[in-house]
Length: 562
Image (tube, rainbow, N blue to C red; front, side, top):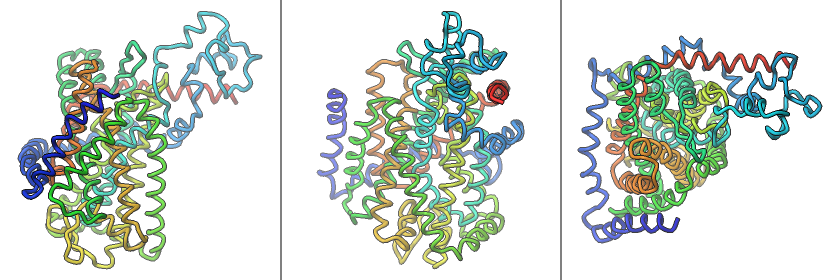
């Protein structure tokens, strides 16, 4: 701990000193000027178009989500209830010990002392109590029961990586660019993304690695390398896994880090009216120190933080949104009507018609919930379960929570606010709009909307944005670190190197402009889709098999109880 903090101090102190020494010439602007060409390059490469206005990556992402939705029989609808029950722990007994072991012939597996069972629906506390001989004990202790966190903790960790400033700043950016109609396509993309998330997170658990100390290593890197090897495509799997790991590290530096610190810095500067030309770098250093202290603890520390912070801040944010929405109850139907109408007949300046607004909505939704990028499967891989599909079902809740619920509420708040004619949809074409002659972008737009209805909401929203940013950064630091370990090994020096680079990007994100950071972040997040989809399309039959296995286990339990 002391060595890490010392290294962090040595790395970041020169940036702070340089910020103070060069304030007159604008350190933030210098960082942005240096970073912008990098951002533009990656953006142009990743978002290449197969036809005018149609980036291939968006077609791949949405088309794949639609395919998985149809192939698995609309799992986003059919298994929504089972997903809720899995998170609640209703099937915890069969996931820990196995359905056949608990609910075999006659209702209880052979070797289980029925007199010690208080209820068929409640497993006993230890394997030793459950088993009366070594064979049954070894059977129950199946290797697939390895894991580090519960379903709820895995969901909270993954949600903390998706529910962030994509929901506050990203939605504002979508509406500023594409108008209210972008909201409709965000919802559609979120619903379809539930199916993709189900597939990738099932595979994440199915092909995870377990270290000698019980630490879990999972995600697309592993189901690409191991899963494709099973299919006879060993080298394709290795290449795709390496590419994913590289892109995931980039995604952790961009969307999971720099974009978050960028928006946190914007609201902090606006709240304190901080005009310093080095303000971004200074805020970035402070955020880097805060995040650095947290990320040392690994997935268990992250899970313990996120399971408390994420639900609280999500609920508080939703409550505030609902207060604003229902305070303007008479405008709700008008807002919904505008969302639907503008989705097919957009009037936003420069959006480019139906295709333009559709792409804006899909792009922002995919960035927000990351379905198809494969990142969430890294966190879900650490769950304690014997059934990989159980965590796939839990994971499909993420896009619903993130996009269908939270993003939609943010959109309604902004649209209702703008019924007062405060800004023109389309803005300056780069995501900024002018309110009372002042330029606002991202979270700043949402902050103005909140301020119209809730006194001192600028303080609340600043806190919310910072908390969302920090929670997203600590979760993405785990995603990136797992990818870094896959490429460079699992030693302490490799860990420290990654974490210092990660924290450096906190500062870069805080100092650079929103456009440069978000273009780079979009490119890095969407780059992950290419190798990830290779794995999903080769391995989705495995998911179908594992889904049947889990549903059969639930059925066996239900029949035994009945």
